[in-house]
Image (tube, rainbow, N blue to C red; front, side, top):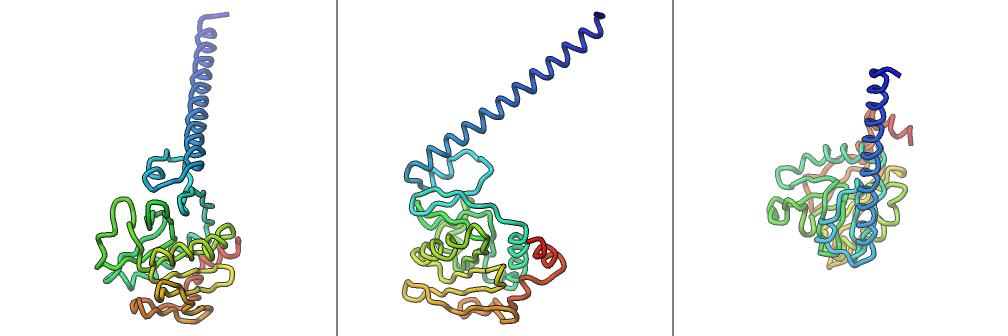
Length: 227
């Protein structure tokens, strides 16, 4: 066996050993992150605990002190979110338009990640590096297969409890927008907008677009066909 062959073999073995070490370290780091996340789930979770968690690539919300994993939005959902963000640019003179991923810290034990929010520029003080610290003026959720109950029931209750003035639910399957308006601390149904209905709001005069505009365009139509 010549020297060059020995050097080549030793080099390969060294490289394989290094790759094996890196793989083990990666696996151990992942297991450590998952273990810490599991530990957090078993206790009452506050925003401070949540913010101190290692980043494991997932998105979470806190419901009454319970940490819950969010299902990832599909590409059609994201395209609708982007289109709604564009349609609400008419509000940017009076409102800050923000979209997910974004922590909306309603209390220490209720932290949501709505798809989009409006915050009045008169309330700049609730916008910080951490996210929105208080009730936005408008919260919007776009339904996904795994989020229907969460958005329609649980988030509806949380936003109502913490005084979010208006809540919209966009249903990509039915192609509708449901509007809920806070009156005397309780949500009442404003309107169910569909097809060519024009979305309007007494609280947000800047809002004016047809529901079907949310789903129009060659990209959105092709993505809808994938779903």
